[in-house]
Image (cartoon, rainbow, N blue to C red; front, side, top):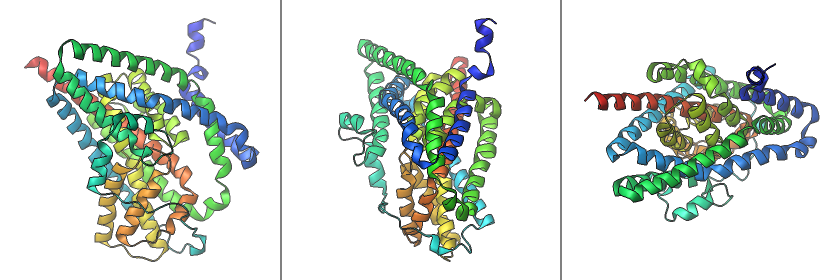
Length: 423
């Protein structure tokens, strides 16, 4: 058999290897139990750390080069405007879907309150327009670069500052022009290419990393805590499924011009990584690799749209927060009328934008919604008990929405370029 024929075999394809890793992980966790987790979980931790290692230089280089190549601030503004409009529309559709399914299925009604656990160390959060603005603008860019991935306060929002600084730096470089702009573009483009090469090597570890992470989750999420919460979990999953398999593919087909299943196959490795890691930021290098190399999207678009999407576009999180709020209200017998659910809608939209792209970040954001509509924070303890599985699913939805957004904006950018040539 020739080398080319061997390379075309199904088992050599990364997405099938990752799928096999998912199956192995579930089997591993269910059969060996929680006691064996430390023996293999380190493999997944190494995989995640390697991915996070390339995120900061990759994002900064890609978004800066993308802005420089887009050229004028007007071009960046157009692309940014379309991107933000897409994020706003899909987030609103996601929240609307969440409120629809939670009102239809009414999870929490009749569920025993004795299941409630303490909210533990989850501290009440707060989010104002001023706070969100300050998270975007770094007072010290170098510190923001080193803050990402640490356990220090504010680390989850470091990517916001990195993206903002990259956009401003790119605009300033483009405005400077001349030999300085050319040199900087060359250096940053070289950095980006080197980081993408590193990313491709790291992604080859994905099947092992996915098996390890999913195995640990399966072992720790015992059936005893899941069974009483099946109604709530089914409602969240129903909402996410509608958004994932109906809303986003429809937008992709109508606005992006793609066959949804073809595009999903191109993004399969990124979706599997998102599911196993439960982190949009950690998945970003894989998402960019798939979008550019597999789907063939314009790097100028992906380098601008995807880093921003991994930070502010959280459809799955927004949907989840709306369902969680109504679920806890049902559980405590608190009636949330039209005004209460409208408050949930608005706050789910705002807090999903402010949520960090790391596991369980929405738990803190939920406290904002709970306090606004008068729900007891103790209810978060029950939600937290089954959050890991749902976190994996909503992160996958977040990444899928980012990818669809990149395809939609890519088509818009192509239309703009064609229009320029014909004028």
